[in-house]
Image (tube, rainbow, N blue to C red):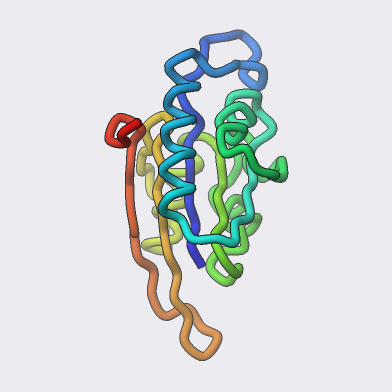
Length: 153
């Protein structure tokens, strides 16, 4: 399975955290990363996003169907994100659009077995792959960590 943990792009400040929208820079970041994901992550895709406005706007840049999941909302447990994604046994590629610190902790948990305070920059992705042998997890690989600033238009 391929798992892409995608942190929402840059968002406006605001009192209601769930209603914060992307900034113009955030919309550019989301579009740039969506283009890179489409060019590099193998199909078929399953896409999940937090119900927060900024994640919904980030994932909209993919121009494809996605499912909104409470398990991806701000403050979610890293274990809940991985379980919702079907890690490590799901088929195909799963993209989860969510928040810090949950996504960094989920990435660390998937790679090391422990939820560590790893950080994902705004708009960045961490791409992990799991390999199975005889139905059991054999290895986990970090395929890419990429921030929007490193992606060409």
